[in-house]
Amino acid sequence: MSEARTADGYAPNGTAMTETDTSLVVVTGLSGGGRSTVARALENVGYYVVDNLPQALLLDMAELAVKAGGAARRTAMVLDVRSRAFSTDLAGAIRELKERGYSPRVVFVDADDEVLIRRFESVRRSHPLQGEGRLADGIAVERGLLEEARDQADVIIDTSQLNVNQLRRRIEELFGGEDARRLRVTVLSFGFKYGLPPDADFVLDARFLPNPYWVPELREHTGREEPVSAYVLGQEGADAFVSAYADLVGATTAGFEREGKRYLTVAVGCTGGKHRSVAIAEELAGRLRRANLAANAQHRDLGRE
Image 1 (cartoon, rainbow, N blue to C red):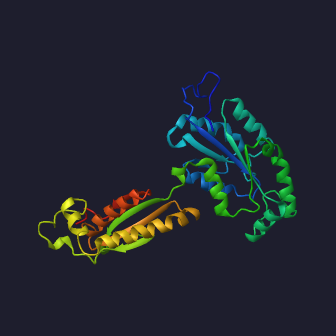
Image 2 (cartoon, one colour):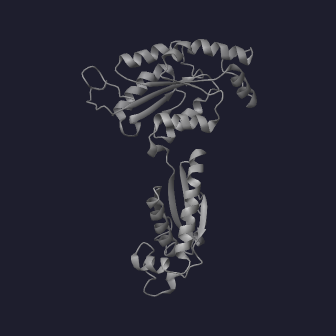
Image 3 (cartoon, rainbow, N blue to C red):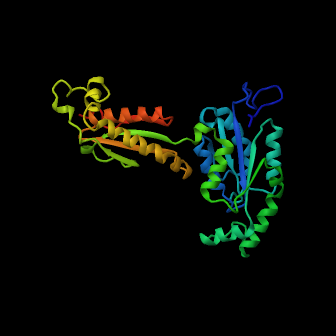
């Protein structure tokens, strides 16, 4: 995918651009085909997604994306017939985008009529174009409207035999690098007296270890400092505890990735969130990184005492 540029190598807004400045994706296709899933998958791999964009604003949005840069450097625009500004000339709008120097990648989602009908019936929704007719009538009208746009598509995905996770993986394979698809693990220390983290996927209890709080020379230090860390990790059972949970996280990450989970929170608690949980969280995050997982340690309650 390349960025929008004019023949002299400048963006339409007059600023010089490099080959990787802006990546534009246009997503369209049949209602019920999976556009929403495609939009969420693009968000997962770092795209700024504008859903249900009126076709008349396609060029304006592309220009804004180039001008904004930053998070908008990768922008996906989702178009469908729900917009009152949608016209039969979507293909013309895409052509105009290209004529203005942009190079969007067009993704078209499709599915068999029978599958689309089942999907609409399963959620008890009418087709946006069926009017007083049948679901099949609305689907037929929409196919006609989108025929030329389908012909222009760079990627056509038939979702008839795909479930949500399979479609998501297909989009991530097409538009996301390996790093974008990796599960990111946050090892979060906390104090039980301040409550459980509501977003925790695993909760580990480090209170079985002796508390450095009762060691006068360690009390004012934290688990991020070497004397406390050495004390906590040197206790009987500490190494086995960290190893067991490192193995558990390692054994489950591939499954979480297949199910579309992108962020995993492993919460490690002690009484106040200052000594034991902090030291364990730092050690566990380090071991996960050495196992080639994207992991970092955060400390929710550090400094509250």
